[in-house]
Image (cartoon, rainbow, N blue to C red; front, side, top):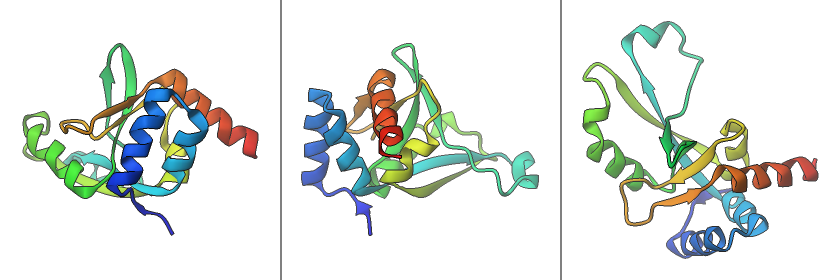
Length: 138
């Protein structure tokens, strides 16, 4: 059963991202759990089944914001508190790494651990390779 990535596994993931090694990245992502953030406004309460994940634009591309631990998610929410309205509820939810690509819209990259020293970007073209790995396995 997956668990949050250890610091050693995260270091391996950083190296794989640096090398743009899609096979290693896919394997490391699949071995862990990740936290996505959902921001819910009071007017969204009618649709409790709909959960969206936080996205951002970085370097002219859309990215899904992902965290390797609750600690990293907490650091981000605290650092970016002005980004959220007072009446919005910020929630984190766990996603197994092998399902992470299911939440990733096409042509999106992954931004891991923003607002930390461990921040990593998996650009959209590399994320597409990860998605292609998924499709080839099916």
